[in-house]
Structures are given as structure tokens and as C-alpha cells.
Length: 241
Image (tube, rainbow, N blue to C red; front, side):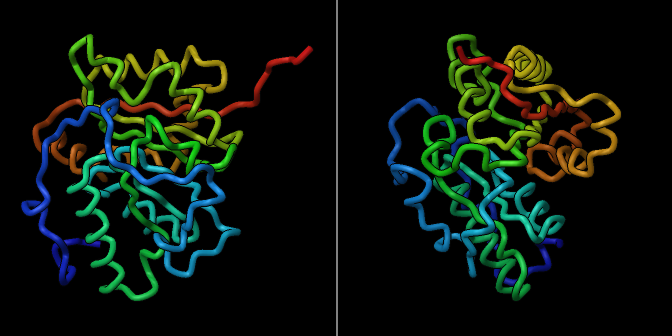
């Protein structure tokens, strides 16, 4: 779907905002005490509780990957989470425009403004997510801001909690240092195992990681390098005594 041909499609210039947000600062968010309290029907028309969200795009930006996933996997519910108000508003308006132009389609994709570093367990049950995405996240270059990075050892415990056994985490970036940081943290965490080259080549989602997002397209235009990896959620091997 070429957004430019869709009537009523929002224009990004009216939704511009600062590129960087402090995820540790206090923001005004509504969130449920637990996943069972959240009304998903406000995001998805004809929502059926037997078909829970399984594809989660963290820091979805302008919604490029989320929309592509909804097209490629119409039976799956995809959710983009974005912390920036104006960017989230753009994605919501984009989805609404796509729904109006394509009755019965794009009803499986939605955007929610929230802070993924704080509230994921409030929205998602244990083992719910089968595909988790971190595409071109903010690198937070300065060392004293590394604690703001979306990937950390502590946060990996949160991600492992909401992921189904066998589910896959995908990430992509054009910053080599950040790529190495993310690979190191996932490799050292005992509940994830990296996909090998053959598994990556046979995964139909991997090709979507590079040019579905605004940032990915920008890197392509400038001829920059892109780095990606994927890790599978594996069984807990801890033995309780």
C-alpha cells in the first residue's frame, strides 16, 4: 500500500517532534493494573479476546513496520508502542486513514502511547508475545545515557516474561556500537538464543526489518550500513530445589 495514494492520509510535517525522549522521566500515561483490565476493543474493531496481540513493535516510530506486518499477517494482531505523543497521534491517524480507504482491512493493527521500559507487564500476559521488534532504537550515544537504552540486562527479564517459548526478538540499527551492545546483552541472557545464518535467511520477517521504517529508509537513502540480529526465547533451564 502506497500511503501517498490514500485519501486523508496524515502528513508528517504536522506531527514533527523532538527525536529524543527521556524514557526514565515521569510521563503522563494511563495503564491497567494487570493485562486483564485493559479494553483492547478500543484499539481493534471487532476485537475477539481469543485472538490476543502477538506482534509487538516497540518504539514503532511512524508505524512503517506495524502497517507492513498487518498486511503480511492479516490474522495476527500487531501493536506499535510509541512514547512520543505527536508520533503516536500520526500512527493512529495513519491507521484510521488506511481503514477508511480499505474497508475490512487494517483492523488488526493499532498504536498505543506508553513507555515500554516500564509498563509492558501491565498490558501483556506471561508468554503472550510471539514476535517482538526493536528497529532503529535511539542509541543514546553518551555513556551516562546508556541506562536509557531500550535493551539492558534488567529489561531483558521483562521481555522474556511476556514472550512465548519459541517466540523471536528482532532488532536492527545503523549504529554498530549499539548493535554490538544489543547482541552482547541478548547473548549473555540465559533465556535467549541467537538465530543462525540459515535461520535468518529462511525467516520471512527478516527482509522486512531494513526498509519498513522511516529510519531504515533514511539509512538506505544515505547509503549507510545496517545491522540486524534475531534471538529466540528458549525454555527456562533453572532447576528449583
